Amino acid sequence: MSEDAKAKGNAAFAAGRFEDAIRHFSEAIDLAPANHVLYSNRSAAYASLQRYDVALADARKTVELNPGWAKGYSRLGAAHLGLGDADQAIAAYEKGLEIDPANEALKAGLADARAASTLSRGSIPPHGASPFGKIFQGPELWAKLTADPTTRGYLQQPDFMKMIQDVQKNPNNINIYLSDPRMMQVIGVLLNVKMRAPTDEMEREFTEPEQVKPRPEPAKKASAPEPAPESMEVPEEEKESREKKAEAQKKKEAGNAAYKKKDFETAIQHYTRAMELDDQDISYITNRAAVYLEMGKFEECIKDCDKAVERGRELHSDFKMIARALTRKGTALVKLAKCSKDYDTAIETFQKALTEHRNPDTLKRLNDAERAKKELEQQEYFDPKIADEEREKGNELFKQQKYPEAVKQYTEALRRNPKDPKVYSNRAACYTKLGALPEGLKDAEKCIELDPSFSKGYTRKGAIQFFMKEYDKALETYQEGLKHDPNNQELLDGVRRCVEQINKTNRGEISPEELKERQAKAMHDPEIQNILTDPVMRQVLIDIQENPKAAQEHLKNPQVMHKIQKLVGAGIVQMR
Image (cartoon, rainbow, N blue to C red; front, side):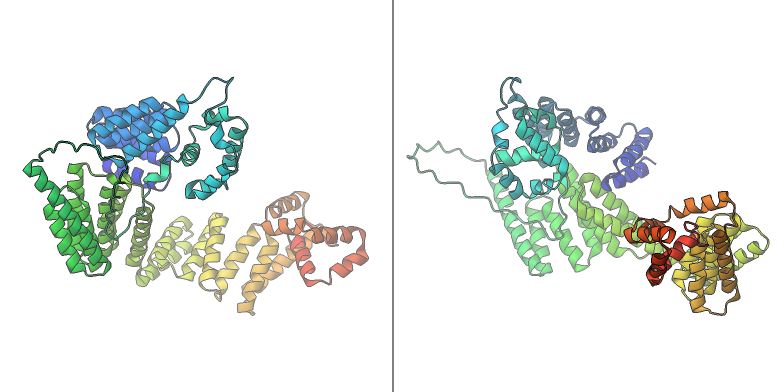
């Protein structure tokens, strides 16, 4: 049960629905109060809403439950930083790095916290000028912000421009905006310091194996030669380990080159050899999984992904690598899916990947899988024969005036065959009998959409509009139906009834209350609103009242005449 609530929370978080995510994570915590991951996830959701006080409480609970989990300290540092306590944030990030020194998220968070701490200590009493004031002055400010791809987008945001202009006028106001991640990003750009924005964790998932970035050669110093340090003897075991790691990297590079050439068998051989040489790097496993995915060997891909996740957990690998393996597994599961239920495991896997790392590509794959599952469910349920049987049951219930039961049968018929216009027409008639006119109107319009030549669709729609006292719209609907079936008596009777009602309005034969009701309803019609706000039509209406001769000229224009008829039918204008 807690896993279901957790999965729902993960999906809501990935979609940006943080309030929903908090609610689901809270339900999961009620069911599993000792699960530290749930508190961590809820802390992240609170932080996304800038509710750092409760985010801090959940982060502390995470660390209390599992002091050896590095990610808990990342949540703790983020909450402290959000509350403006840079020193506590630094302590939290440093504690996490003691547990997992290679964790990139903790390193980036520590850099942010140190920059915020430096900026905070740089503030001086109000009587002096801020030491950072100069960086916000001069034309190079806008040049730097425009050149940086992240801050360039901020220049289109009015509140951001106002914030920068305020700091330019009064540099001491910079402390007011330190909690805004955009300000931290700006300071990083202006000081040439790499800052981590909240969305920096969103790295695109690539199917192509990871590339090894060449290490830059150390710069040669031109200074006078110094005495060489005493040589230190490296243990044979460590030397052998280094050589194996170096050889493994070479094999990985060779595998990447073969992959690009689509020489998949060779790529697999290189990655397999790299795995044998160095079992401390799961990228060799995920790369081989990517090759299996390209080759269509989905079972092998899934096995490698499971192995990468398991080994990655043991090694405390970067959460992005774990997410990458889960995403590839989910992709392979989608490829293997043959029925709607097969998508469940893939969807769950994508949700787990998003918990590790919120990646837009993974989110897209999750949405695609959910959509494919829904479409396949509809296809599996599709059965025109059963749909006809359900429709006949609905017809019998309709004759017995059991309208709610008939609606239920018609709805089931539509699930079996959503392309049958007759069922929409019949259900529209049921809704009309039940007084559910908006629902009936929607069904009638769907009936017409599926079969524009089906007369019943127009009679259903026109009748509903007539009951809603939208006589002008009902008249148009009946007239449209007559284009397809000119001799349909039901449509002709509908036209006659609408004309009678419109004429009654023109002759003043309806009660003031009914006229007022019709006019109020018409004023909510966007088409009527557009006519009344049109300057040309406003002049025409004035001329009708004050200048009959000019009005006659206006009425010769077909477009003007059509709009006048629209206003007359709606009860807004009366022609006597």
